[in-house]
Image (cartoon, rainbow, N blue to C red; front, side):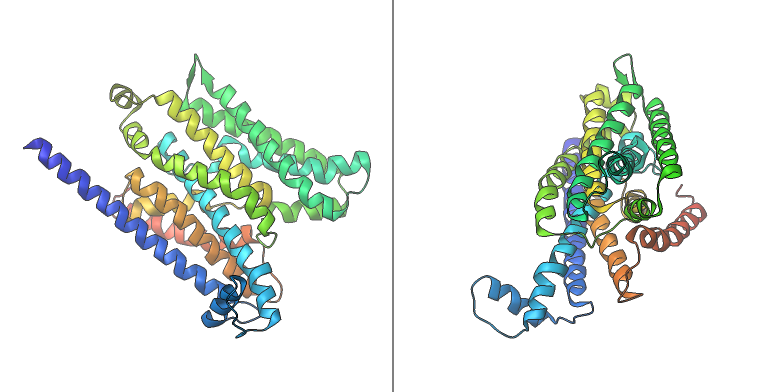
Length: 359
């Protein structure tokens, strides 16, 4: 009797997770299509369809050459790039909040963002100081690998410091992440003291985030690590559910807690490192989206992780849409927009949650 009830409950949970994921995916698709139509050059859905069909070899000239270039070379790659970055930030935030069992944790807690910023600053200030001014065409491709390397090294140092007697201690890991981030920021601060105006301007704009740099070539580079990490983290949802009950309980239920911790930290660092190395630092998404999902739907990680991935992408599309239209033809920094749009909403949710004793 009990086993049949348990099986029925599991089926119900799977159906709920599937339904919510499908609904969020459809919302993201609708948002994606809507965003394709918005911009300085207007595009209708029929014109978008005609351009795509034309690229597939079906002759259909219900569009202009300008519209084709805008869609295929600017708007479409930018939106796909935005979805990938938002997915990386959302899923890594959800996984880290799960492993730390703290809804206020965000990807930067393991030092990856500060490490990436330091890596970028090395290119902007360090290399130019030693070898002279770097052409912008070369700097665009030097920044991502240095930023990624900085993020990975910072995460590695955080993991090493957070390891105690062969185990990853969550409290020590958080403190180690804070220490590494502080050290990276101190080095950056020292460099800023000696930087010239152009170097400061370049670095400042990088730290504010930029989605306009999305190209098909960059999409090809970041797609595999982000999608692969997202799929693996999604498959680890059951382990995170077990750890949410306590590490001891998870261990006795057959979960290799230490392996799960290291894997999640590594994959989250990979996701965020790849994302910020190309987009610059975009805050808030990895913090607020998983928290909203938990408050609105469920704390079950089989729901939280996939919805956070889709929700992160949706939030970043909305933020990007706002950034490129509100002061058109100029564009607001995406990092500023995510913070400005998300913070009041997050405060509202926290207020409601406290009123209902949800937190």
